[in-house]
Amino acid sequence: MDKVITVSREFGSGGRELGVKLAEKLDIPFYDKELISMAADDINIAEEAFQNYDEHIVIHDPLDRQYYHAFSDIYKVPMSDQIFVAQSNVIRRLAAHGPCVIVGRCADMILDDSINLFIYSKMRDRIKRMLILEPGSDEKEMERRIREVDRKRKEYYQYYTGNTWGRAQNYHLCLDSGLTGVDGCLRAVLAYLGELSE
Figure (spheres, rainbow, N blue to C red):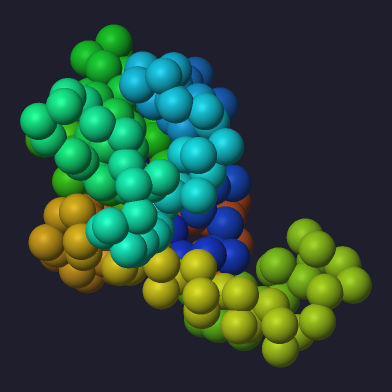
């Protein structure tokens, strides 16, 4: 495999786990939260500040100067935009080094020549999966959390790309992890990639 693989995912669908397993199987690097610290280093901003903007937009009062960090004295750029630009630069730099798996952060739209996956599943399957990963959690609260994270991802994606998050035409392969589990999705992705390399 000589291309970058991007994984977009609904919260609780197992997309991150799929990305990890895919990278291991293909013996290529995997990037998710690591992009935050790399981008933070690039523009010399504390990693904690990046966490507040991770895959969602934070809208602040434009007159509240504490949320702005100027590239120069002339231009004032919102922190969320600076962070998106920094992460985009890191994603392009990683892609230039060779194949890897990148989860989220609009990587599918930032890169021109990547293989783009979208992982989804029904709400009941995602709740069930998250309750296994986080035992003792309340089912109703988990559903609320899943919907909130998905809403933020959707808004972030649309804001920075102008495209619709989760729309099949934006991806090469969309997979329902509720039907086959993460391992079934992994086998399907590997079969798809095998067809591409022939």
